[in-house]
Image (cartoon, rainbow over all chains, first blue to last red):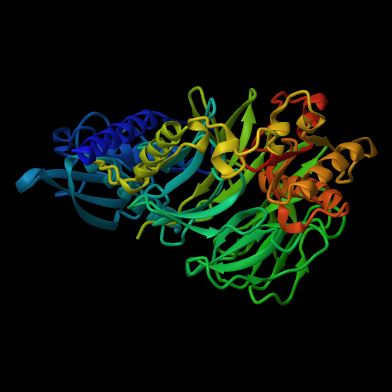
Length: 425
Length: 182
């Protein structure tokens, strides 16, 4: 009897917490676009009215938001994939590519979405696919189609099906949230009255590592997104912070102060096997593993000011990477390991910059002034970061060439600490 | 007192219990876990953390609770980009060192802080340097290392939230907390 009451109360408390947490939607505003956008015609799909919302609308808004495409008007008429569309007509209207498709209802409230992508210049088919889904998966299906179009037309994998993690602060409450890359479908993974920082996706996208201050000090946790269960990775005497996953997902680089100042260590994902990988008389922090596993990039003030360094995971081959300016922090290698995004300070402004690792040439990408926490999209095209606009924390994204710019805001809340998740498999 | 403790335990159990309850959702996304800090229900720290200390009426920890005691001063401030204990705080550090030496069972948590400018993780490391400077100030006076833990809150728990020099100075700080206060 007592147990039932406790269970009921528990359920009620948790349900209240969950429902309170569900309303922090990110709104995305495009503030800049690519110079040479690809003109595409995305027709309405035949039969898509049977769904709660049109799949082709999701595809269109994804492609438009990327800043790399121009949408050519196709009119209100749906065009199915079962016959060849009038490609010449759409080429004359300016489209280089055209997407047509259909939605067919199957048994048991399931649907099949079939689509074909054409090159209007060469009058050839670039690819076709059929996807099966339930009615509520129309957004996920739209993202997959947009990924398909993006990859066929740019040569890079699309990231519309990926997810992002970030921290929302409302009043005194902190929430670690996961949302689709377009800001839809936000879910709260952790709610706390103490700060949460530095979320980091496991390479397979199933877990987040982060730092939570719920124990009145920074402790590193791993949180399984499917089950909500979590485990402590590092809770040594002193501070534990800055988790970064190895590309195989088996180890994490972390920053511990158990032996003195903030120093770099690696640790198995279960918290065992702690190994020190660098030693300095100053601060070493903000590790980030290169995707090929060769380097751990980090920030260190061992030379007098915070600068970018790298070291091999076996603690060999330490190198300094940045030499100009007095404040270069948060190095994040691009997925192809050719460049490094980081935060640089000049004239009191903190901005996102990118360094070409071959030439060491640095380009400042942003025109905001309080930039932090850069995070590459898994295809390397965009960098998501935190900044401040009008005294409020917002997320922003900039393309790695600096041309495409987006702003992501949540009403009445501070948003910070973004982390772009991996490609879905 | 027992009753109050029981209530606290129940509240903690309720909140902790959410962690193992996966939230079902149409979209199969993240599960919700709630970690409301232990401060949800206030308990007097003397009774909760030092069993046996309630025997005498002159508990040393009572002195920490006394707002008129010099021991109620717990903050040490630092200059911009500096991690050196300012001379003016030496008497305060000595006072707390004497208290820790006289009460070997009492532990101290030092929380270092940093102003909000720049990277959160780098600021966490800067806050740690301030906490470590204060810890060294105490251990130099003979306080055993294992009686003190120094940690950092970085820029995450600012006492002052405006973007002004006065405010940033207020946040370049290390605070001393005693057993029962953390």
